[in-house]
Length: 264
Image (cartoon, rainbow, N blue to C red; front, side):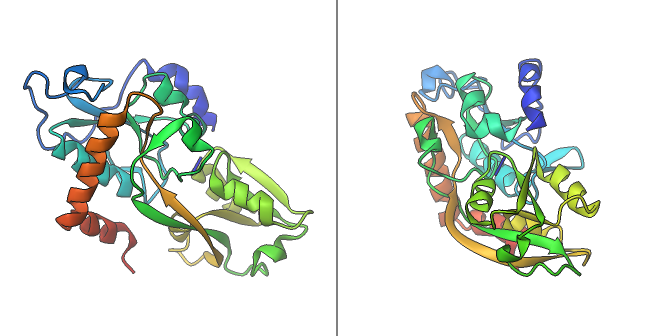
């Protein structure tokens, strides 16, 4: 996944939105931070950067950050006896590793596809989600496949694997329009400013619920999402998060969260 939000980087140091206290942070000395080997940004908390909203992975509801990524992060933080703190950042700065390198957060949880290029500047957890790309069009559109985009326009989110896939596969005369986030993309197709949107399937599916839009085509791209960490010095934190992911899979909590957002 994907940023006018990049401009928010300068403001990130001014405040962190701490939401959803999780399972009681530990006051024991050495439980977190450098003494515990985790090198956390804020002692006693797991600070997560995410590009919000990007439903169903991350969005705000009733004053709380939720979604598949956020619910997993909440359980992971709880299992580590840490509070959860969330910072809303632009996807470009997130997927490039800039916000993590700047010490803004411990981990990026934002539907980030693991790619060789991103692995040059980030360390990833074990994969936690397999993703498909998809083409969203108005219900009455004559676009039935990516080839039908010849001479038409398609919206993508900048910095994403969906944007890369689009440019590699659309006809040469297709106009590819970059947007900072899904919110702007969806507004554009609603206004008729683009003919289609190409992005992660779960996100596009959320735009079909009112019947005005439909999925014209799905694309198997063998993408997997991972939680992203600093390239150096994050080894113990990555190991701890992977351990929590395994626990969530083993005890059924992962499946419970998955079914909340992706059950047929």
